[in-house]
Image (cartoon, rainbow, N blue to C red):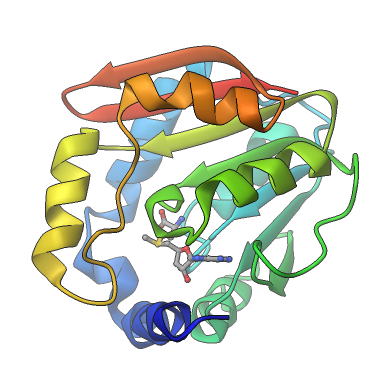
Length: 200
Ligand SMILES: C[S@@+](CC[C@H](N)C(=O)[O-])C[C@H]1O[C@@H](n2cnc3c(N)ncnc32)[C@H](O)[C@@H]1O
């Protein structure tokens, strides 16, 4: 792991204790997910990999959508995973760097990335790893509850190590997905939302 990425992991570790109180109220986030549910391709019985689960704020919601399927929720910041585990929701939690650790092959029906893609140090490599971890026909879901430009400006305003952590603009995604052998299924680019779904 590069020095920048170690700094990024330490950054998220430091934020873990205050993460849930720093952003929008958790109930409001879950209400937005409920409203977006028809656009989010999760099915009962799915095995889901939640990438960068943070404190597990939406892990329980994911589990409810796929029950009796299971959620594997991973994050590379140990303090985030400790906070997520402490919630006691039924999921497999693991401290894992999705760019370095084994994710498995054809193991998941869905890979769910909420508010994490800008922070992945090598997005093309991450997408290729997610494609490999998906079963044929499996779905990648990239979700941000804000406009992509506002997200990028916000990260830049924070300074190192997350300044420059950008969500690629909508027109960059078809090429990024093609290179990972994923097919774009839907892209919602709205004032308060970025939602992308793709298929393996
Ligand atoms: C902005 S937070 C989002 C947390 C959660 N998904 C949410 O919406 O509240 C991004 C998370 O991604 C994690 N992360 C960044 N790079 C990662 C990597 N390479 N592997 C695993 N987790 C990573 C960070 O530790 C952090 O907890």
